[in-house]
Image (cartoon, rainbow over all chains, first blue to last red; front, side, top):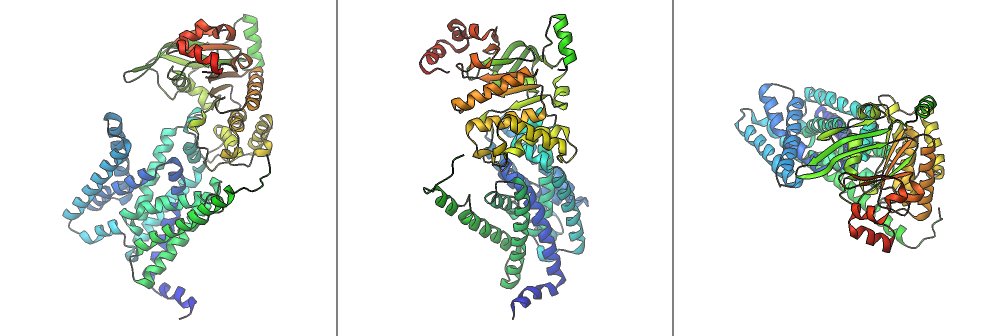
Length: 288
Length: 263
């Protein structure tokens, strides 16, 4: 079998084409958002919100409401609960996050177990990229497009929020609004990605691409290009691997992302382990 | 402040307060950070805000900027609610070094451009006037050659100047600087002092919170000693008299000043 056949064979199947398109869409939007999450220091929050949306998605399914709506409600509920526990007790933030998201996630599991049609909902936990229907693809595409447009239009404000919220406030912007916007996008994006890799692994797509890009450049604008491109490539590679190895697609997408991060962590020119080792050795550096 | 207003103020013999703090009380739970602070700071002058750690300096800054809502009292900027001043981009802020993520992937030029965001459209796309203002501000703080460096690749003094440039690009009439001399070498300190005096000479209001008492006589036109309330407001030389410093810092403060030159 020639290399070209290796690439083309899976594309004979409609479900594979849909899987690849969906994965790339989710990968791009998650990767964009991840650039801000890693810089604001919200990786744990991303983890928490992406798990906490589960009961919201299940309830939306039961009530026939859009998944995104349920996810948004529970995403904000999670953040509000975390803030309330931290602010009104002696429990620290990391513990508050751990308590809230695991409890909400567990609530989601309980709701799934008592909901008649279990097959669909179990896919939410582990992802079911090969079973994406055209209708799913349309829904994911719309949500992703909304998140993408908002992120691109508001990118400079969000970056200012991440870098210096005090200055944002001083020039009349609302850091509170920008933080809430980022949270809303987080919940929205979690819904997009959970079809691909499932609730448990969504956080990988929300952290790894941004962290990888951060090691490759000192320009935020370039991060916004590097992260989605890398994430999309990794996702497609992961899907192909899952086809040829007949292994879990969501899992492989994340494993490939992790491998890419490892390579960058080791070999990135300036901020990689090797690069730093080389530059810290005595080399003549021009003054200035 | 316009030339017209200046003329009016001179004619009436009073100087309109750029920052007016009236009987502000701020409580954090059990802790009383500000206990009835009243303060009036005029334009065209550099005012030093002196107090030890925990004296309420940062809280006062936050109250002036509207980040903290006072439990009592009010703040006026240019005679109006600070919300108006903020919306019009009249308040500039230079953060403390510890409050900045120096590894953040932005260039010096990016940071200075952030001063222009309040004047830009929905997506904050820079127009020619914005680029010109940024270039001008960079030139004024002598960082033109460093414009494309990542912000963390500057020295301590250059970092401060980058943030001052942001305030200049913003054309802020009121500049608040939080500990601008911490981690700054003597030469950069002199540059920053000169810059702040120039900005005040433009008619801007410059309020500087600092530990560095030695820079104070060169920097400030007047000084405020703060310990949860205003202990003293007036001449710098008088503020630095041992009995006044003893009240603001306790006797230890004077001791440290004698031995190390700063508190």
